View 1 (cartoon, helix red, strand yellow):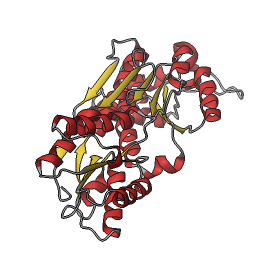
View 2 (tube, one colour):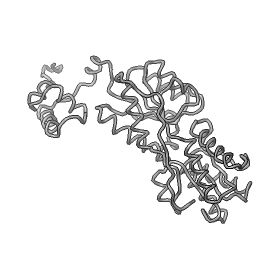
View 3 (cartoon, helix red, strand yellow):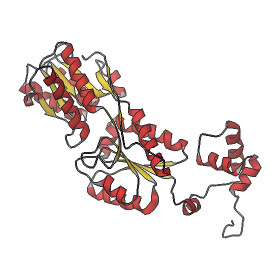
View 4 (cartoon, helix red, strand yellow):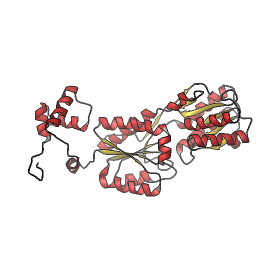
Length: 341
């Protein structure tokens, strides 16, 4: 191949010959694959640098029909995205898997219908080979629309609609909420409130359902007056907890549907002149880094955020390459006992 000025461009075969490896090995190194020796990787990268070789992604895409890129799409506002460490944990884990496979991860945010349509047009145009989709709300049909355009998609969390046809990775939200509430009951608490997550998401619905089932299993009535709605954020947790304390000053515990919500609830408890744990026990959900650093340290339900991100990326790569892939993956959670309950 030559440039418009007539200069021949270096080829992959030249890189392989100069490095003393096969063309396939040189290709794996330059795609970022991990299944090569350190010696071969060093030789190939040195050879490529010596002759100024650069892979031609556009040419490869014409041959393979693939872009060698996948999208990491968060269906939230930028404020929500950058305030919640959950998304960064998922991104890091997914990036590790895709990089090992030699793929580029394209990070994007799309919080409204117009942005969804623009992304759908972009993905359907062949710019990505698949989509990792996080934080789907309500009956949003974006994953179905992507699949209809032959763009493989894997969701974080069970969708409210279409779960029988879509691929997703989730944690045991109902089981975790049940575990949190049972623990509070076991410590002697009896007037247990909850601050929910968004109820247009399965995670919000399932965590509320787990809380309710634990109360009913213990012979306690489900009291709507002990339920306040949050948005997986500190501000909403603080606002909801203040409302609960005003409405039910006799409450002695709260299960918050996320750690950020729990941290907000703790602020409201202290602002009301009450003691966290001494007067009102608190349990969160997620086990983000801020949970352990909170004062007092937050008792919470740990969901395996990194494992979820890796599982999502693995399922998507399986779909892209035509390998068998589990449609539904639900990972276990565990109670992490600290100082708030």
